[in-house]
Length: 156
Length: 303
Ligand code: SF4
Image (cartoon, rainbow over all chains, first blue to last red; front, side, top):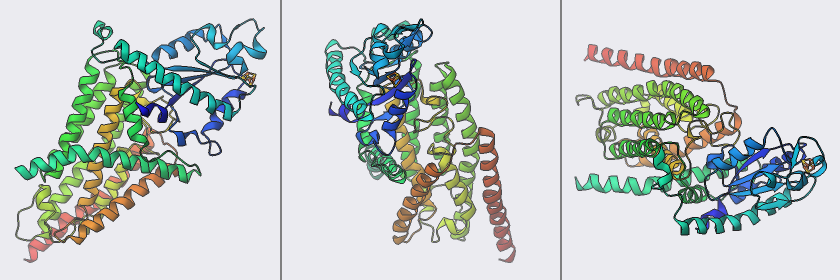
């Protein structure tokens, strides 16, 4: 389906960012960059999201939250690590409570480097994520997952 | 009979297109108001197509059934309206549809949908009196416009009256347009769920609908939007064909007004929504109803 390319919905989660990257993510939605012209919406709800944007390294307290949000996003989904902190732990890497990059807890598909990551590179990252999204969807269809008659649903 | 069938099929096929396009235009105009470029006007269709291709995640099996029932009753209400059926029935089916939505959301027992559901019920408490009053208003007005002819709730009779209903029902018109803000889930009354990301209860009542389930609520919303705008048109329409053109212009103006209100106001709390809405209903709807009743009895007295 072509529609993926035109309707990626994001969910943004701030793991332990210094807020620099968060502001850049929000700047993408502002009139200057206006990601909505590509159909990109910043939805606050994992159940509606396609792309999971994480900023900042993951710490001991929120690793479960990150995992839970990841699990709540329906397939196909793509994870975007935004900023050096989210990629590797960055400047906070040596802190006692930081586990490192987001890839320590959930599989990351696209790494967007930068401290802070520029809005342009974030948009580039989302565009990269979209082709991966397409691949994942094709794989999902091949395996016949995600349809309402999925036996996993019958557990109730 | 055949005519009704054609109208129903036409409604089922065309309404989502019109509703989707209206939403696309809404998003474009909103973006322009915020000095953004905005998505293409076909964006809502792409969103829905994508949603249908997502995995269906749900904590229970009733949810999908209840949502389909919601969609069914919205389509039913719209079809009834366009084949010229009873206006009261139309609004009752719409309330039934809303109840199914509430049930679908509350079947999941999550905190955010819980808050969203409560707020949805509050919104229904604000809308429903005005919807019923509107039906009653049309009934009374139909009796006045065509003296000597029976009063009627039937849409097919209402459109053949010789005077536009708005001449008798200006207060009802204001009240009905006012509750449209709630019905369309526009700011300042987008309490239970919002089209925008800045929602304090995540996505409120729709938070637990994933993939296709969310797409169904979107499509139901398009049907409902078309139907409610048609009710706005009904205020203007009379036996003169030119009135249909005027009705279309009024509908476009009302829709633009909703977009403007959406973009210029902040969300209110539920109690303020309650007070404002009931205030408007009582002042405009109530006074209009009072005058209508008394004027008609005066007229009877002098006849
Ligand atoms: S990458 Fe830089 S700006 Fe971004 S969260 Fe880390 S320290 Fe802050």
